[in-house]
Each structure stands twice: as C-alpha cells, then as structure tokens.
Image (cartoon, rainbow, N blue to C red; front, side, top):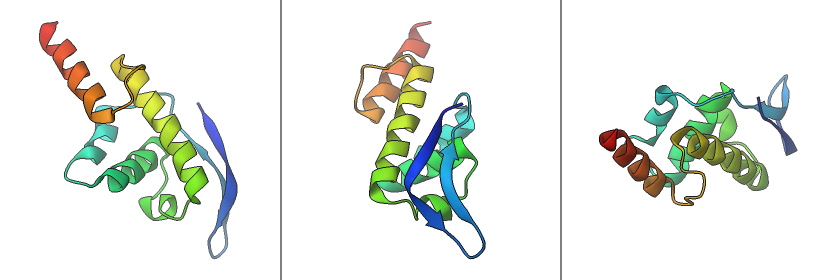
Length: 103
C-alpha cells in the first residue's frame, strides 16, 4: 500500500486527516469514476475510490496534495493497465482496450 502524507492536513469538526492510504491495486469499480465527469471530478472520484475516502474530503485537499494523490492514482492505474510510459490517461485506457481486443 502507498501512503501519501498530506502537506496540508484536512481539518474537519472532530477529526484531522493527515494522510491518504491507497489500496494495493485498482479494480474495475475504481474506473467507474471516469464515467460522465469532467477531468478533476474524475480524478477526485478515482482518488476517493482508491483510498476509501469520501469525495467530499478529497475535494478539500490542498492543491499540492491533490496533485500528489493524482500522481499516485495515475501511476497505479497505468501500472495495472501496463501503460506506465503513457502520460494521457485516455490514451492509456485506449491502448489497454486495444491490447485486450488483440488477446
């Protein structure tokens, strides 16, 4: 599991969130977050799904923590798809789909 220690912890009423812990691997359910959403909404939903954290909390991340979490999430998905060198997530998904069709 990968843990991201937040540079700017999120303070809620009685709780402070100082880290996000990502699952060992992504699942198809995690990819549902890419359906019918804008780029940042997709990313927020994916990070929430991969960490088991509510989207409302992910939306409160400081921008630097958000981008650090996004980097972990994208690396995780690309690793699962076997497309580690591809920077564009849509391109990575298209390449992975093509690989599935060929096999």
